[in-house]
Length: 256
Image 1 (tube, rainbow, N blue to C red):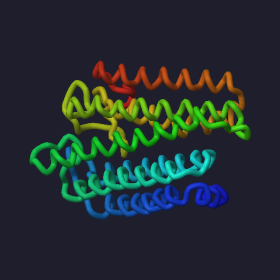
Image 2 (spheres, rainbow, N blue to C red):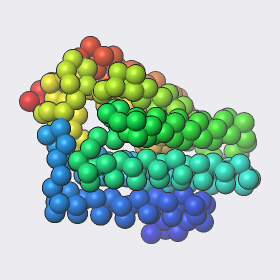
Image 3 (cartoon, rainbow, N blue to C red):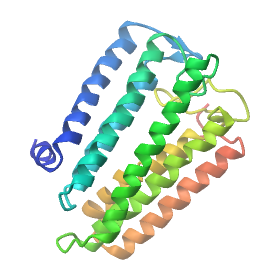
Image 4 (cartoon, rainbow, N blue to C red):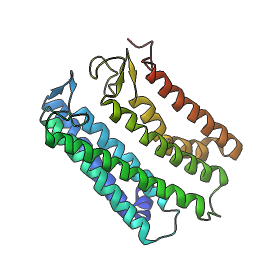
């Protein structure tokens, strides 16, 4: 509870946006169990649930990190960029899920094609907002932050930006599966392909460096050299998983 109190003081906009998405997660999970809607052989409600949950994590992470930055109008603008762009994505994905329609790669009508393009634009703008915050972490002074924690935040943000834009690899292919069509047998809830390459996995791993690296640096490593080692190994893992997917190889081959 102390974490949430501090988070609310640091960045109330992203705190409440994250909280709203957490409520959306609960509603979507309830719909997933009570109002069955299927798309491509999976429960359609899990996709907006995953996006809403990812938005909770991102919003609260950025809310916490921006608390270290000097208060200025550009941070307020960045907050609302995150709210508008990601709020739009979650709402549209949930709306399409409820109709049993695809939100991504759906260009079957001019409207769906326009909305897919708007989602790509929204994701790009949100990523650029995070990139802007990362620049501030390189340009501002943080005398009260341990160097290992500061570099973990910087590294996590850089990896987030790079692997967020990796999403264009899926957009240009109009699919996230390599070696076959989207859909079919996948891991529970995540729905990552068990038999083919899946570009979503590297996307997921790279973007969540924003949480993994700072948490491990703060609670476990507590050393700048080991933080750099961790960041390097994490980057290698994300790149390896991406190359593996591009070769149409499943991430977890032993799970069939």
